[in-house]
Length: 263
Ligand code: MG
Image 1 (tube, helix red, strand yellow):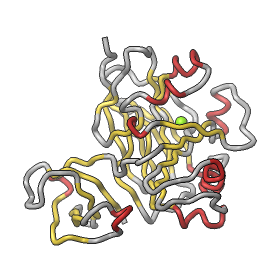
Image 2 (tube, protein in one colour):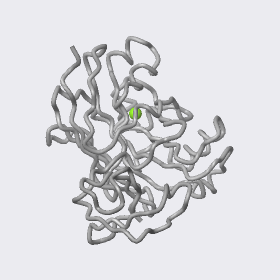
Image 3 (cartoon, helix red, strand yellow):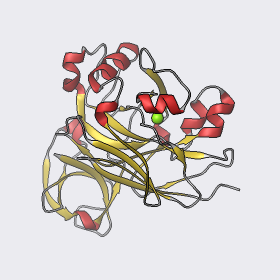
Image 4 (cartoon, protein in one colour):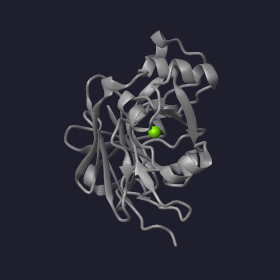
């Protein structure tokens, strides 16, 4: 099931405020009553064409986006880092989340803003100390993230909070796929149409059950929390005005533009 969050571009009879919906095979959205994370899948009578809406970030994390660093061996190597023995985690604030086609705002403080394509897990329920064998019980679905990073500030600060936390630095979308099972799917990033990152999900060092087990052994996870699972090699800068597309086979493509650097 493909779940979207959207605003209707015209008055389709149910208002233009953000709604959730399920996309069918004919690119029609069956509009849902309420947030499916909390209300379940409760269909309304309304339908709208996918082409008549503006897609928003498919989930608004209530508390946090947890990020895994250096989770692909080739990326650890390009950062001159050893492969970690256990997951390295950090946080992005929920205020960094934007959706498809939103503009990534280049902050005045930074001279280099990078793309990082990542598989994103959406958590379905309150959980703590989740055994690997029960990880699927707490997954609502998957989407795509761009872990936008002010690379110069990451180096300068010696820790990652500022570099990872600017508003608009966590594009998510285009939708949540509830039936996705991570395997050998391709994961790619393109800048102005040119492939910059290309790998497969089976190259992750720590897989999804291990990540959920590890993160939930540190902190309680809440419904709508998002965990992003690391990026393959090929990270690099996004020029001013660039169009950046991150894609995962089976999940679609998330595209955003980068602003000019703030003066
Ligand atoms: Mg990352």
